[in-house]
Every structure is written in structure tokens, then in C-alpha cells.
Image 1 (cartoon, rainbow, N blue to C red):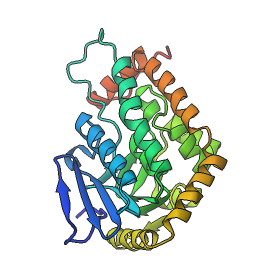
Image 2 (cartoon, one colour):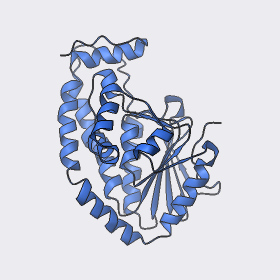
Image 3 (cartoon, rainbow, N blue to C red):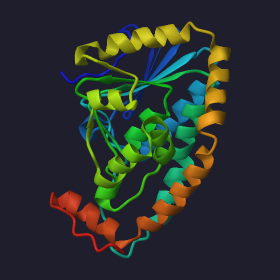
Image 4 (tube, helix red, strand yellow):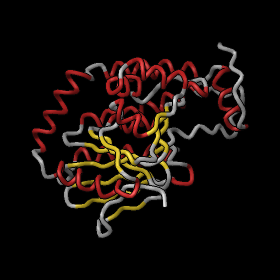
Length: 277
């Protein structure tokens, strides 16, 4: 069975077809629940996760938030299937709406919520999924977990704060390599780079995440909030500017020929033939 972090069996649950919400004591568990699609984000998951993160941030009964994925992936990022999109379809408006209405607000809330956020990473963690993990205060990864940005593979740039959040954890050189070459980083390497804070045996992911969440939830929540605020001010003070830069860059690229070639090649399982313009 694939590794995944799960709350206690007796936790009260709210189940949707894309997101499971559970609370054990003062910890709110948010489990992305599209396992057959590797927890990629469709419009339903966009809306559900933004609502759930906002509610957890406001709820004083919640003193720690855990974000994880069901099945064999944390999240493989945005659902980039174009479906019936034609070459004449403009994708920029859709992309800008997704970034401004869903992905960027989720990232901001994870960084600014006055309580710790933990990512329990199982399996593939790609693109937006990687950005979500990097936005959390503590990242626990299963040994089989791996990370990739993947944007350039389909002719796109970084978004959802990945440019700043990943760079803050691992430095510009490693972030550039991941972004431009699509380098796949395994969990031990991610630990060595500082991308994750702990690596545990696959079967121990749930147990370790629960223990960490319990420790954080029983800690000085107001002090934790002040620590987050201070670290944001010292190290991530340009997050909003980075998000805006990503929006402008990404919305130009999604209507370019290289993205359409990239996504077509991805669907056809062949190497893309980029034109460079």
C-alpha cells in the first residue's frame, strides 16, 4: 500500500470527492483526494482547498494544520489536460484566474496563518504540489517521495510562489537546476539540500506526522505565529512581488507555441520540439 499520512481512525471527518477534512484534537488534517489523478488540481480541488485552508486559518480550535495527499502522490500539480482546447483558444485568462483566485491565496494563507502548517509528503510532488509543500513550516517526507518542478518541460515558468519559496530553502543554484532541467530530487537528496526537514520510512509517515502535529498543536501558538511573522518579514518579504511576477510571466507563456507543443508532447508521450518563441 502506498505511504500516506492519515489522522486517527476515530477523527471526525468531512468527506468530499476531492478533499478529506478531519480533526484530531487541535490538528486539522487536509488530504487531497484525487488519487487516480495523482491529486492534480482540477477546479473542484482548487475551490475545496482554498476554502479549507481559509477555514483552518480562522478556526481557533485548530492549532496545527497538516496537508497531505491520498494514494501514491502528495500532488502532481495542476491538471494540465487541455481537453477540447483548440489552437485559437486563449488560456491566459483562465490561468490568471486560477493563480489569483486559488493557488496564490492558498500559498499566502499557508505562510501567514497564525499556526504551524505541516506537509506530509508521500510519493510524487511536482510543480504546484512542490510549491504547496515549500509553503509549509515543516516538511516530513516518506523515503519514497520525490520532488520535481516540471514547468519548463511543458514550456512554462514557476508559479504559486515556487520561485521564492523553493529558492529560500535550497538556494538559487539548485532551484535553477530544478526549474530549468526538471531535475527529479529524491527524498534523501531533498533532506541534504534543506528542501525537507525530515525523511522517514514509508510506513512511519503517518506516525511521525501525527507526533509532530501533536507537539506543535500543544505548543505556544501565539509564539509560533510571531515566529512565522518574523521569518516571513526577514526572509519572504517579497513573496507578494514574486507571486505577481509569476502571474505575468505564466500568462504570457500559456498562449505561446512552446506550451501547446509541450502539452501535446506530454499527452503523446514523446519529447517536445520547442521552437524557443
